[in-house]
Image 1: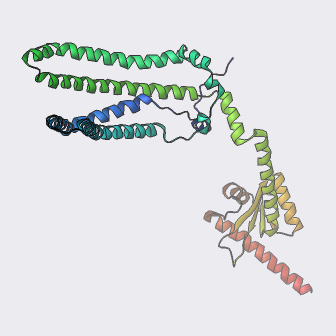
Image 2: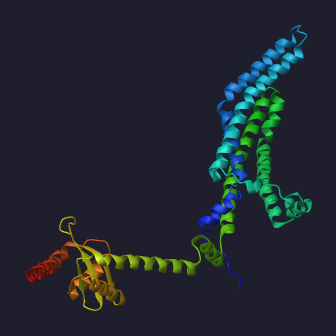
Image 3: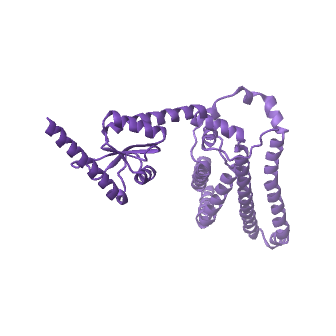
Length: 356
């Protein structure tokens, strides 16, 4: 049975897909926001550009009554400047909003693999097949749906305003341009609003499909974990080697111990204490069963004192890590043992000194 893709995508898979230039972006969002921003700019600057075109018409009429031989070039210059003043801010604003929207949807992505030419992309048969595929029909539907809504909205606005348009032609042609411009403006902002709503739906669908396509099967997750973390057998062997190295270092430190506290057979804890350099005794090694036996053997070879104290040996083994000082609640018990060891060593020194 096939392994279903039910697992969430890993961070590595997301990075790999991003390097390929695949991110959840919707072109409709950029287009809709750009259109809305341009319409807002035109609405807020309406008095200015109306006055601008009115001034242009006045100058052109005055120029028509003059005897200037180079009328056409002057008119073209004036019209070009007026168009540039009117369209440049709108184009710049639309481009800026589109760029910012694209960056906000997925950030800046540099994907050389996505821009490299591929022979499959140059095959016209592939593109023809895509046109009649499910993906092609879905793209066509995404285009036709908002277009149909905008056409229906235009028909509704014109139908509802048709009596006013007819009466304006009877009343006089002076009121017709104002009415038509108002209706064009109404159709524009309503269409932009419909387009913005559809773009938000499109972005949600695009992101949902992107996340759905990124899902992984359990087998893919296991294989990726093997690639990133290594083979479990190799990692286990490495951990065993690390444990053996730590054990060898710990047993080597037993030679520096001051006293060995035993259970007497199951536990062994090696303590080191220097009255001049150390504030409290430190556990340099500990172990149970076989390791405890090895600690006792090293202690015998190096003539390190061993003291049997089962409760203290168990408490030190369970509560203190190797390399850590003993807790305050065990100071008294350990101090008694160290005092006993020091007295025994002092007596042994006197005895050997007297024999000498």
